[in-house]
Amino acid sequence: MKNFALIGAAGYVAPRHMQAIKATGNQLVAALDPSDSVGIIDSHFPEADFFTEFERFDRHIDKLRRANDDRRVDYVSICSPNYLHDSHMRFALRSGAEAICEKPLVLNPWNIDGLLEIEKDSGRKVNTILQLRLHPSIVDLRATVQAGRRDTKHDVDLTYITSRGHWYLQSWKGDLKKSGGIATNIGVHFFDMLHFVFGGLQQNVVHLSTDTKAAGYLEYEHARVRWFLSVDVEDVPPAVRGKGQRTYRSITLDGEEIEFSGGFADLHTRSYEEILAGRGFGLEENRIAIETVSTIRTAQPNRLQGDVHPYLKKYAAEAA
Image (cartoon, rainbow, N blue to C red; front, side):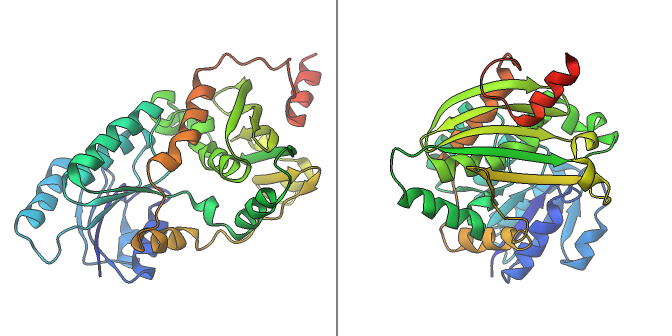
């Protein structure tokens, strides 16, 4: 049984990590969050120590390490705001533990280089949650693409709308310097999936980039991808919104819908199983996706040129 600490215990995704730690037969010994709204811990690990101040959490983890306590931390799971991931991974490695970090791993590709050096110095590893690489439908799609002709380029449309209320732009997620923007915050795992399935990235064009939505064109070895991301409920198709749904996810391949609406429930547990078996995704597996979102963040959008997503054509028509 391994001992875990968790940073960001009050965050949206933290319960999935707690569930994964428990489902894999391990224990959470300490957790940290500036917010004390963490009653969810009682559902999984009521005996875990909890801290609202990083300095006291740091001292506690260090004390367990120095005393070689049987509760000494083996892994630190990181669910903190995006801009803190780099610092918290460094803390984990320097504390003699391995890191398990939520997406996005970091905001900028050069942060990966610094982490590689700390991995080498510490002898510990950074693992990341790239759960779509484990989704059965995505695994099957990748196998199909790899079995096809090497000169084939598929036409892909990716649409992901996950509505958020007014709170979103008032939180750290609405701060570009803290979240990395919409493409980084809600899209990075899709961009990783596209690279995983369709190979090396060859072109990255941004057509739209605002606080609540972004769109563009990506070309990979085996795909031409038009993508659209949004947190605006008005972008959810009327027929879907009429059913009371506030989220819409669609990926088409050569005009055919790829069905992957199910199969998400246990992907964090599957990720933990792979990490504990020594097969976790590390720093370099993240590089292409982080480079992709970093380019999107700094690009000058041009919504009128190139192969644009159908949703963007709609906005252009309305603007005209």
